[in-house]
Image (cartoon, rainbow, N blue to C red; front, side, top):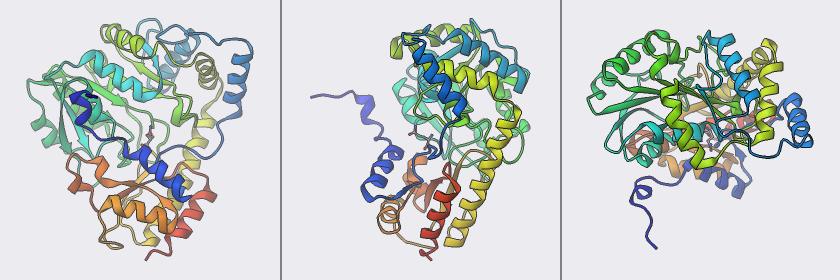
Length: 382
Ligand code: GLN
């Protein structure tokens, strides 16, 4: 049978494939980024309670009112943003659907989308699903954006730019002055910023700045986030969009026809989490992740990888050229099979596979025990 041309232009998800490789070899899965520790009791109890109370039918397609109210309050509390609960929020099935729905709603065939690389693997396919052309821009050695190359990538065909801060896979946290340069380019070219801020609370250095708070950007920014990382519930698939009404009017339609809505009882539970978990929860989350980062980073350096400690998110992109001459995809499978630690091949984060040939990505959203065990296995490498 024939399949659509556009699906030929991207491969399957390498991240998900590496989870299957990890399972096949009984390896510790540091490939796909999902926690192996429990979600907060408060959220779990609230979910059970919502199901028992029979909140089991469709929520309003763009989000349960209680969650939208909680989100507006969150954006006011953390970032001083005023958000209209009726017109400026769309709750989706994960940040993945949020990015896809927003782009399908706002990007036309033939448009160009600026994408930093290394990138999280969904952004290229999202652009292609819209019939748009991703224009890839390199990042600096330290993971920050190359701003001259960013300026050169914008043209009259540019419809938008994808920003992911804190970044997967580099761990870069975009600084205010970097965002200001990007903002000026967006304004000059009448482009939209699609910003994936799913790791907003997993931060070790610097401050999380939503580009929507940069002057002139609120009206042209789609701010995406969700519960997966903040509340350790990646399987719940609760994503969120904050954008001006002119943009959400279109996004609500693509979202509605794609998924109808996100799981109703889980939206209630996420609302409870936002309402009731206070500053100490967010501090603990970042502190716990900092300890995990340090164990992972020290373990990788001790094993002979070359890498930098990330400023945010929960990944380390590591160069293995001192350890092996294998290409990244073979190295990742070999490491899972022979040493019992699964990672993601670096090439899946670049438009030109050659750029990632000596790199693999490790996710450290795991218990200290899991990470110490992984570090112990990797120590035998060198
Ligand atoms: N964002 C996570 C990662 O990069 C999870 C990806 C996924 O499978 N949704 O590993």
